[in-house]
Length: 226
Image (cartoon, rainbow, N blue to C red; front, side, top):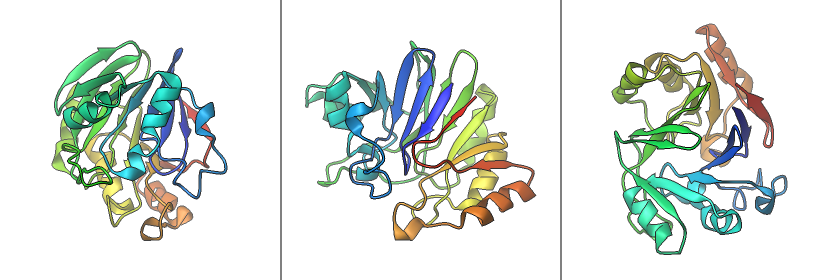
């Protein structure tokens, strides 16, 4: 499993021959738009955690460029289906076996609406069980006790957690979240894109290290392999 960071909460996940894109927000991200050309991105599936613009801005164009299937909650799926895009709707607690692995749609505590105010359903996260590795994509969320349920059904190799604070968990709560999901290997996201969520990288990594955990902060376009 190869994971590439495209800024904010946008990730490319390559599992075997399948390309999964998560929360594409590139053309509106000043940190990413000059580094990543969305026309170059490959996607067989696009996973959307919720409807906010900084998670969905480029989803329609990329889906139409690539023929990707959009996977999200029922309301978001309907929104894109009306635009002629193939979708797979899910809802909290549900599982589905995709060609790249099993996906479970899990709880997140946040809000969800499209930029025009249209209701975007309830926010969520995804647990992906690939053939060899399992990951948790928290989406935008506060720390929640529901995270403790994840280790009851999946042993994680990586937790992808928001750490920018203000709109989501900050570093301290993300450390607790990693305890809840029983995964000490964390990829940080949802930081630095706006003034409200700028963080001190070295301080964040030190706080995780002091708790015996590994926080990875990738440069835009940088990848890791599990």
